[in-house]
Image 1 (cartoon, rainbow, N blue to C red):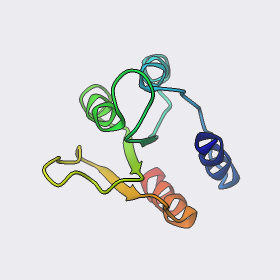
Image 2 (cartoon, rainbow, N blue to C red):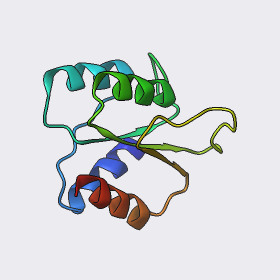
Image 3 (cartoon, rainbow, N blue to C red):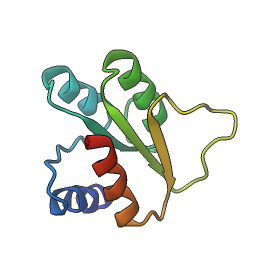
Length: 106
C-alpha cells in the first residue's frame, strides 16, 4: 500500500515512476533501463537485500543515479549513506520528497 502511495505521489508531481516489489526486481529493472535518474527506496524491503544494501549496489553499479532512502526507524548511526543519497524518516512530508526529487532531477 505504501509503495502505491509513493508511486502516486511521484506521478502526481509529473514524474514517471517504475515499481519494484523487492530489491531483486529493482536490480533487474536497473539492469535493463539506462534512463532511470533517481531511486526512491525503503530500508525494509521483502526478499533479497535491504534498501541500504540496494543503495550501495546502485552507487557501485550505476553511479549516476541519485538515491532517496526512507525508513520508519532512525538511520543507523554507524552506517554511512552512499554518496549523493539522502535519508528521510517516516512519516515524511510528501512536499519534502518531491522537492528532493526535483533538486536531484535538475
